[in-house]
Image 1 (cartoon, rainbow, N blue to C red):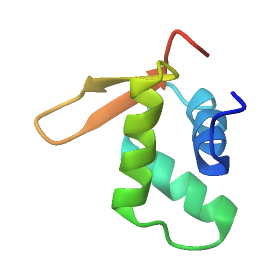
Image 2 (spheres, rainbow, N blue to C red):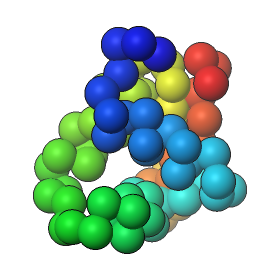
Image 3 (cartoon, one colour):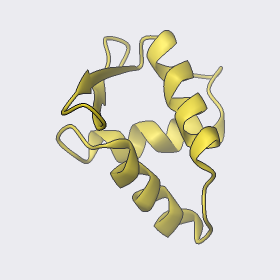
Length: 74
């Protein structure tokens, strides 16, 4: 986990506190923690990096909404 950025580690912490949260729920939780608004592209690019590294997996809830859960490396 040394290779992860602070936001990536924070995403993993928030992710494990929920059962299949959406990206928007993760964003809202991090914005509350950071006390600032997060850019969607910053959030989702970090989620994608975590998916590629095996820390996070993604599922589809409906045509627009994805949900996320811990991957095999967590």
